[in-house]
Image 1 (cartoon, rainbow, N blue to C red):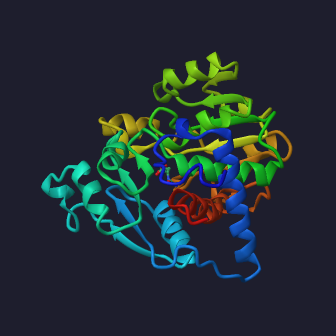
Image 2: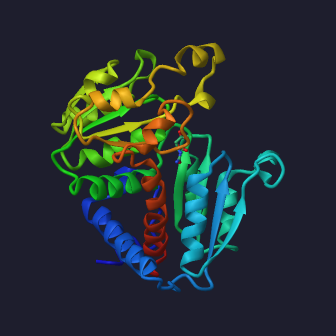
Image 3: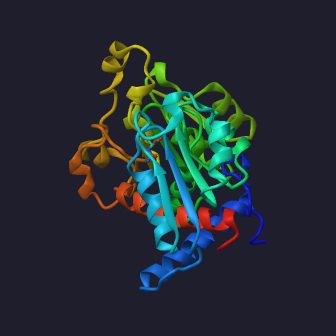
Length: 311
Ligand code: NCD
């Protein structure tokens, strides 16, 4: 059972079955327990993780690197696309994948082009993890989002979940809706009309028998939700800056809105936030976004350990 993910790439949440999700969560929980009791993990000793970030990142890169270091491994990175890597020289990701085999035992890639992680994985023999490919997928974020929901709500099934913000361009909500869809949620998708969830995702969920309500009204949706998953308007994906300026302030969650929400609502955000959650909300006990960011470490430890077979 524990070898089911060994040697596998983690590129799209559709590759993850329920048994994989449970295994990753259980492994993350085990690592969390070891760390909480002051224990030291050594399962990645002598191994190298390559982090190839062709797009900005704080949380994702830091959690992957922290995860590897906390298991006794090493990290090599590419972070600045303009100066420190050959992407600027037009190197094909396939070839980068081939090269990585000579340096590292596992790799994480983030890139502005959808499908980029797959291209790198096609070249690489070592397991490749998609750390975000354009507006496509961000599977490990969705895994830590599920882990957070389980911790905060005590269950994954029978929940009303509102995903709000830039549902068109946000890869986190694309991954999370597929993954959470396996647990039979009731979804509210809240966005400006121009930034609606891609139709293939909405239709796919409805075809699977999941209730999906699409609306522009955030207050109405959160009044009946157990979880609000807020996202920023993805400035870098806009072709027209004027359109971004027009839509950027579409939604702001403040304490007033929290008070009108369903009692005890859990508020999540993949970070970074711009202004879509007011700072005053941080004091609300259901504001889970910084706990969510911290769960990135055990979840990514589990993913790295399982794909390398060193859990
Ligand atoms: C997200 C991303 O990069 O897709 N951030 C993250 O990984 N935590 C969300 C975002 O950039 O808005």
